[in-house]
Image (cartoon, rainbow, N blue to C red; front, side, top):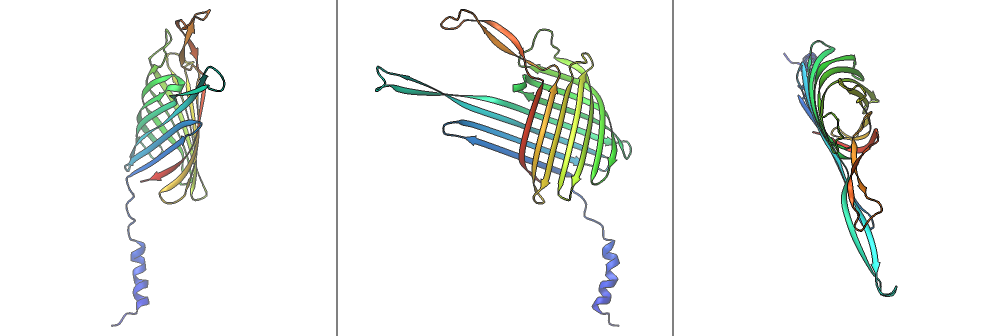
Amino acid sequence: MRLSLPFVLMSALPLLAQAPEAPKQAWSDKGSLSYVSVGGNAASQSLGFANEYKYTWSDAAFAFNLGGVRVSTTTFARSASGTSLANATVVQTSDTETSSESYYANLRYDRNLSDRLQWFASGGWERNLPAGLEARTSALAGLGHWWIKEDRTKCFTDAGLGYTKETQVFRPAGADTGYATFRLGAKVEQKVFATSLLASELTLSDSLKHSQNYLAVWRTAFTTNLSSRLALKVAYDVTYKNQPASVAVDVTQTPVATPPVVIGQVPYQLKKTDTVFTTSLVVTF
């Protein structure tokens, strides 16, 4: 009995259609790095990095994120001396200092209780010297709920209780270093066309001891894929601290002597709002 090639192919099509899909990779990792250097008559260096690692199971997920920004600026001072303008000698000195420095590291574990309800436990560490924060460590546990869980649109909220410990660069008398906290969060993701994603996340945390010591963070990012592993990301973050940290300011005795005499320090409260705008290339591993 002879079988024609078309007949064999048509007979195999149902079997090919039932072939199992390749298993999805359980883990994913996205990293970005940026560096800017300016030299010549002005000098500055800026370094930024971020990494997002995630591992998923059938009913749970673990995420670990870290990143930071460091900016150093060099300023020049020039002075001249001499017996006349014709033989004056110009001396230039430079001073390099870190004008901005912030780092963070967060981890979180989520486990499903149902298709839309889940519990979570998280921990985080943050350092932001321009905002007067030497270190902030927090631990949290709570519940989360998916209001929309579709392929193109996602909406998620969570709430939790925990503990926060802060170390400020300058600690005024009576300031709390540790306190119990609660946190509310909301996150929305929307796919734009086939290769872009708009994500927005808002978190609000507050002290259970002093209700005016609340912190709000709003993060918005637009990511568009350039290839299967390379993407362009534009992000804008806003942080509002209702009771911001303070820095110490030296008090110089008047009339000013030579050299000046510092008689002590007074606190100066920093601004409540900080903003960060970033553009970066993201590599997916």
